Length: 145
Image (cartoon, rainbow, N blue to C red; front, side):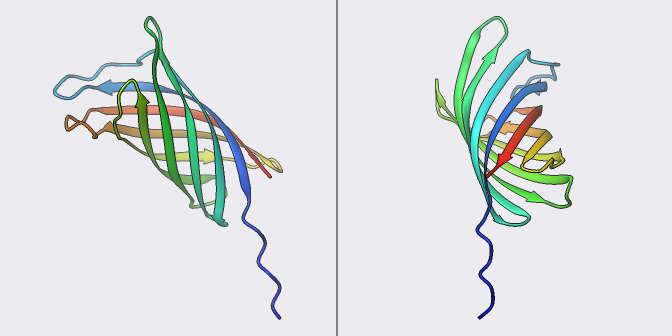
């Protein structure tokens, strides 16, 4: 009998992100939005190069405080040991539901069971029919178990 395949790896993740540039529907580009999104999540490696992830957390905007709370499922594909592509789909559930597409490119480096990440995403809220456009930057830390 062939040896059994090893069980997929699981991980917990924490992220801190911000919007570097933003263009509302029909508007012009604006710079850094002075926002912060904190997320915690759970991920599972389906194969050595493909993982599913679910992250949850709030966003705050400087000057106005709490802005929203979102669920963010994602699919992450490692194209090399240090580079990955992410297909994330943020679903803000408070104060109103929407769908935000967040394709991204990330860098990572494993230090044993710990992996810091840095990811750049293009974002577009498409769920309400008036898509906007943004560029986000997110730093993360994954711990595998």
